[in-house]
Length: 209
Image 1 (cartoon, one colour):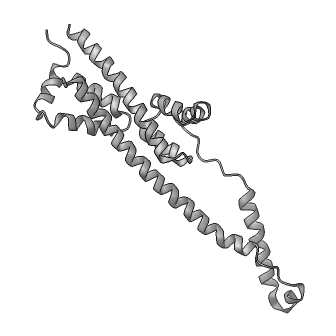
Image 2: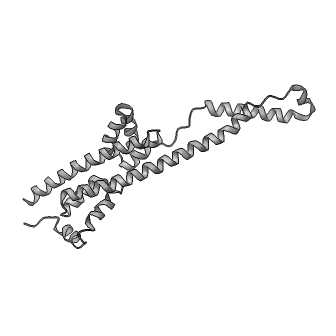
Image 3: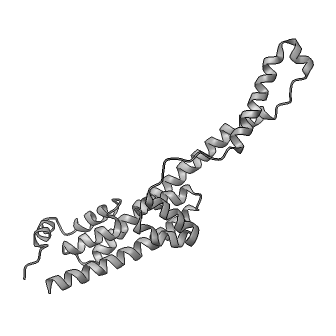
């Protein structure tokens, strides 16, 4: 009995067998395809479901690990830069005020400058962070899940709304330990890829009789 996937399967069959899992792994690294999507494509293409699942999850996991490590380095660099910029301003703000007698001898400008620096520093520290552009619905959901379920629950639910790469970067940017992020992203990828691979295998089995 012919299947609606014969054309796709014939196309994939032209690729050397050892290269097919590599293509599935590469697809797993693409956002919105990821491990579960690439594994399902592998099953449709005729690959062994176990091979397709492992290849898809591996590509997704490697990509997420790279994103986490890069995001962690960027966050550390940003925090360090902010701290270095804040140090001179704080030093200027705590600099001893110039005596009134000195102000009368041509140092009025220096006194005014020190006062302005102090006021500017106080304003910058106390002012709440400006709100950025409106967040997407996916990010809003992720933020709610983080508050309600913590990192484990948010990681498991996040693929419903966001790619794992974006979820991982968001968690790291919010200050979550990179090792904790990697652990729960790996768990989520394995669970979702396994579930979708099993579902795809069942559907193909039913269709092909």
